[in-house]
Length: 219
Length: 275
Image 1 (cartoon, rainbow over the protein chains, first blue to last red):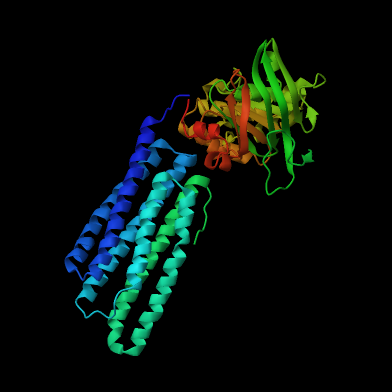
Image 2 (cartoon, rainbow over the protein chains, first blue to last red):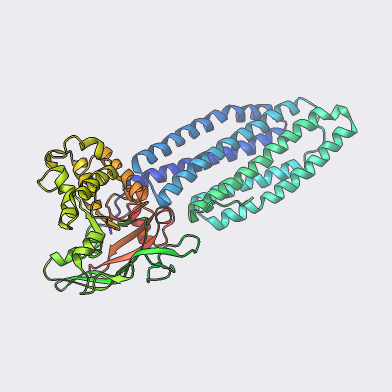
C-alpha cells in the first residue's frame, strides 16, 4: 500500500533532528561548564552562560513546531507518542541547559576563590552524566528502549557519588566556617549534575513510552 | 438480557478488569456473499450492551455490510447470503425463524443521509408506533419523548405538523434518530450518521450518542477516525484480505486501538500510512 503521509513524515523527521541538535548543544554546555570549573576558565564559563539563549530559542522553536504538527496533522498512536515525547524531551533538555548554566555560574564564583580541594569526584560525576546525555541521545535517534533503560540504571552511580560529595563537603563546613561559602557553592554544583542525571532518566522514560505506549517510572 | 463470560468469539471481546460483561450482539464467524463474491470472511464481534462500538477501516472493507447484517438489512438485496451467527441476546438473528420486522424494531438503524418521510415531523416519529398499533395518547407521548431524547423537542414543538423536509440536515438526522427511538429499540446501528453534516451538527450527534448509550447499545460505522476515537468505547478495525473479503483485524477498547494498537496494519491505518 502506498505511503500517504510523506509531508507529515518529513515534519516528524525534522522535529526529531531538532531534538537531537538541542541535545548536542546541551551536552556541549555541560562538558564546557565543568571544564570551566576544573581549568578555572572564566571565559569559557561566560560562553556557556551566553550560549544558553540559543538553547532556549531552539526549545521555543521546537515546541511551536510540535504544537503546529499536532494542530494540523491530528496524530494518533505512535505519531502522537512521538510528538508528545519530543515535547517532553525538549523541556528536559532546556532544563539541563539551565543546570549547565548553574555549573558555569558556580565556576565563575569559585574560580575567584582559592580552591577548596582537588576536584576528583565531581569530574567523575560529570563524566557519567555527560556520557548519559550522549547515550540517551543515541537511544532517541535509534528509538532503542533497551538502551534507554540501561542508561537510566546508571543514575544510581551518580546518586552514590552525589551523596559521597555531600558528606565530604559537609565535613569541610563543620571543620572550618571559612570553608562554608565554597563548600555550599560546590554542593549546588553537585546538585546540578545530579539533576541532569535525573532528567536523563526522564528522557529514558520517554523513549520507553515511545515504544510501548506505557508511562513507566525508571528511577 | 444475557450476561456471559468475555471469551466468546475468536476475536477476544474486550473486558473490563476481567469481569463478566453483558454482550448484547455477538457476531460469530460471519461470512457474507453477494452472489459468488465473498464480502466478509469469518467476521466476529462481541458488542457490549450500553456501549458504543465503532467499525473503522478503508472503503470496501465490509464494515457497512457487516453492520447491515445485524438487523438483516441485507435481506433487501437479492442474491445475498450470510452464514455464521449473529446472536441478539442469545438468539441467532440469521436463523430462518427470526421475525425480521420485530428484529428491525429491536435493532434500529440510522443511515448516512437523513431520510425523513415526506410527511410532517409528528408523522415521521409516529410512523412506527402507529404501525405497531399503539393508541393515540401513547403515540403522542412517545413522539414527545423521542423528540426530547434527540434534543429536537424545543426546536420543533411548535411546528410538529409541518413538513420534516423543511428541517436542516442536522435536524433531519436527529428526527430520523427520534423515529428509530420511537419503537423502543435496544440496539441502534449508525452508518456514517454524521458524514453529511457540518461540524456543529456532527458534534450534536456525537453528544447525543453519549446520552443514548446509557440506555441503548450503539454500533457505528465511520470513516472519520477522530470521531471514532471521540465517541466510541470499543473499536473494531476491518480490512480486506487478499481475496477482497472484509475481515476484523483488531478489536479492543478504543483507547488501546488509538494509542497502542497491537496489529501493525491497524497502526498503519489509523496513522494514515496507507490508503
